[in-house]
Amino acid sequence: MRIDIITIFPEMFEGPFSHSIIKRAKEREKVEIYFHNPREYPVNKYGSIDDYPYGGGAGMVMRIEPVAAIIDPLLKERAYDEIIYTTPDSEQFNQQEANRLSTCSNIIILCGHYKGIDQRIRDIYVTKELSVGDYVLSGGELAAAVFTDAIVRLIPGVLGNETSALSDSFQDGLLAPPLYTKPLEYKGHKVPDILLSGNHQKIDEWRNEQAERITRERRPDLLK
Image (tube, rainbow, N blue to C red; front, side, top):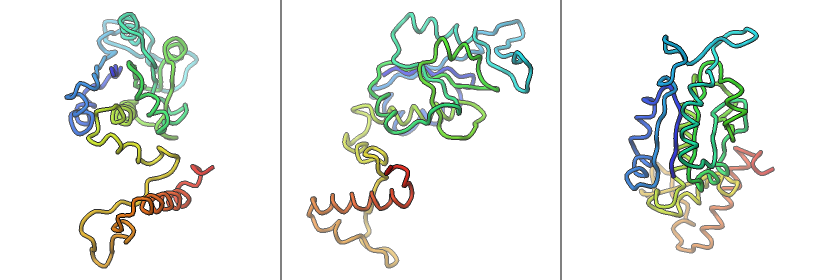
């Protein structure tokens, strides 16, 4: 998979993309991630890439020309499955969307900034708009990092155990059941006997019951 991220702050990705799963995925050549900075395509001698909104109002708006200068050449080089814009005024990203995007070959993620971007960028280029929640961030970089992590970990060959992701929360519409490891007892708290029984059918039934219980208590909306 190839992911192209359009951002005015590419350095924000150095930490999360240099460790753990994404680092492993890059080393195993399961994903290629490239960064493109609109500031490299200013619209005037002052280096501007934003301007005041027509009609007045507070804040600045990212202009279309710097973004187009990045996307147009990319589209000439290859076909992209999705061009994603990170914005709070859109549908929320979820596990099902992560599953779908993990099967793509090429994705562009455009990180919003300032008050927003010129609507024509959304009209001409963007094929998918996603949010991480009903709140506003200072920019789309953190959201883009979340999307990338959730997608990349699902690519075959990235995780050490291929079945691990299948038991994650939300994969089957439920939250994950409780997990236990050594020691068997800690400060009076014991590992449930069923997990020590060796009866895998009973263990699976217990885990499913626990997943349903936890989902009902914490996220009853998922059961609807």
